[in-house]
Image (tube, rainbow, N blue to C red):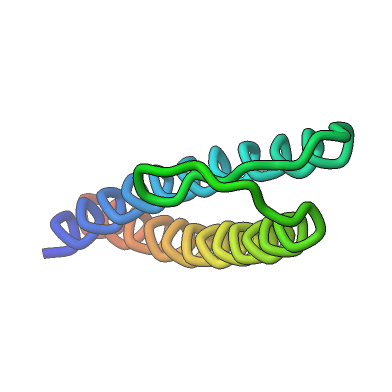
Length: 101
């Protein structure tokens, strides 16, 4: 029973790790986009569906900054979940070892 619970926790940790990696990748892309927009004098474009539209630089920066905050928040929440699951896994491992002795 406890071993199955431990396996489930490890599976959840793996899933959280993939989610975190995804958000970190998106955050990096976002940072690069903000940097590129700031350094470039030409008007930025945004792909919407199958078309590319010229957009206002300041509005796009604001949108990207907002997305950045969301990504950072999600990463922080995932890290909190990971820490809780790791603690629970350690407790279960101790219990399992006690029972095996």
